[in-house]
Image 1 (spheres, one colour):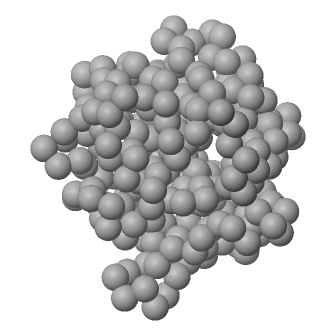
Image 2: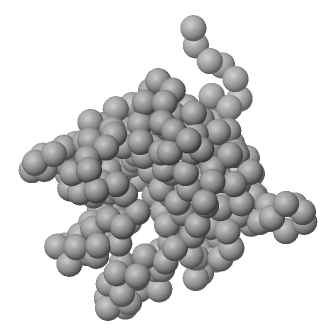
Length: 240
């Protein structure tokens, strides 16, 4: 059965938008630039992940930036995205991988996996693109095994321009998120406190021990090449 709902039509717009971006985004936004950056990401991510190989799902995987890093750390990774062009690029980046992720078509909000089937749900710069982030976090919680973790990577924005400009009809549907329980102050992707709002959302949807941590090695690398991009990772656990 086809889905003719407005949300379905908007999702098609989003998928088309990101498929078109696959060939146009500069290095460092969709793929690791060099061995030095790769080492920085590996150093930064390793402490947040189990030491033994686990089952990881990277939602909104794009060109596989985070999925490939998790695979290089030894984990069994599935990457899902609705943008076929992004998945094609991701598979190309994985050609020489000794442990390539399994890249599949799938919606980041409604990943096509069974409940309690993975140990890690990851994403990088994805939450702001979702039509219903709260529903996404609830769905990710359901996919995790008890004690599993969400690992969500975010930029701390230092400029109002974000680089990826949606059409107005799409931007108007992307929700601002409250930064605390009062709901008085809300943040959008362009705000520096957007990661704090995502952390509040993770707590509200059932994750425990939610923490935002600066990715020090990655940020040192970004500073060394003269960018103002500063990265954080949100982590949280599913109750056991």
